[in-house]
Amino acid sequence: MSTDVADILKRVQRIEIVANRKVDDLLAGQYKSVFRGRGMEFDEVRQYEPGDDIRSIDWNVTARAGTPFIKRFVEERELTVMFAVDVSASGAFGSASRSKLDTAVEVAAMLMFSALKNNDKVGLVTFCDDVVDFYPPRKGKANVLHLIRELVAVEPIARETNLAAALDYLGRVQKRRAVVFMLSDFLAPTAQKALAVCNRRHDLVGITVTDPREHELPDVGFITLCDAETGELVEVDTSSPEVRSLFARQTAQRSESISNQLAKCGVDELSVHANEEYLTNVRRFFRMREKRFR
Image (cartoon, rainbow, N blue to C red):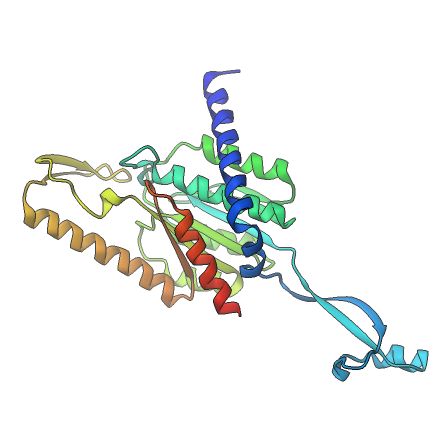
């Protein structure tokens, strides 16, 4: 076994342990309440009891039996859950021990194991300027571990992100309604139309992954910044308060613009940070969804 493969398997094992612990401790019950199935499905016909809704009476069975029977329906809980993960080179950035892509993989793994506990199908699309790989939705732990292995082994791609290409592709390959988690830093050209179309067909959630250093420059003198996707170099004097202030304002405006774009399309946003504990934000997001459904 090569060192690279051994390292990948170790990382998958660590992610599995961390994800399962977080699912067991915090999310197992909430997941069911905030993501719904495709609707109601027929369960059984049973004899009418006082207090039952008369609109549920099955008149055909009632006529044959000579006594009232009602149709009983239950919510179809089984879901198809798709993950669209941005593997562009900007995701390799991280100012601490964990990059944005590492964080995206951990969050995806946690949600995948939540889906696994609910016996849902789980699929994956990785993308950059175009779709890189597609793994059709399947059930089972072996499938989830396979998807996590693929994410852990991915090599970030130094090309500009195209959100619309991934969303359009999902629309073609996933015909039935699904929950779609799109994990990206969303540092890409606007894709408002594609986001809106995907959210009408599916339950789309945008998981925005950022690093604190993208919001605030440290005072360390002259530095050279490189755009990971285009290769463009910019020299910046971080000792200047005006430069740091301008940088902070521009990044705040960019984050606000991303949130506004998602909101206009009706897409729920879950924001996570690369070097912080993300469970607080995940818990808050689940509570928001739960409250809205109630």
